[in-house]
Image 1 (cartoon, helix red, strand yellow):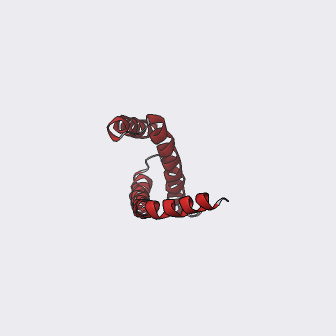
Image 2: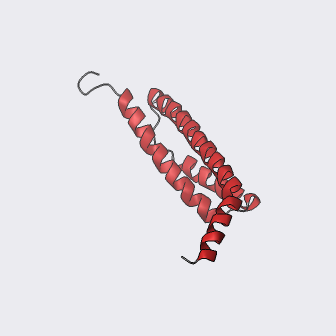
Image 3: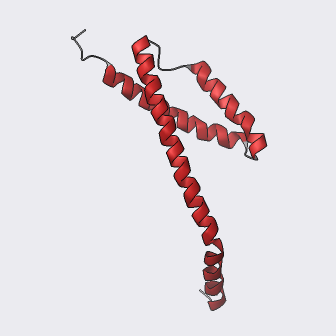
Length: 111
């Protein structure tokens, strides 16, 4: 690598450091929020299980996706980006709800 490029890369790293630290803090907050969201979904799974409510609630998925897409404009985010991101979040949530609900079912033959 040419000397000027090395100097530029090093200088760029110093200039970027505060922003990288800010991104690291935001990433930690996002992970914390996802963990909090998942914990709420585990409670929902227990309520569904106790009430005999089906795990999959298609109308809720649709309304959630509609809601986040609607928020995209005021947040300067592409609606497709939020839709894809929340599709993944919802998929993982559904998987976790299924695991929780399965753990609450009595073993076969013990009903």
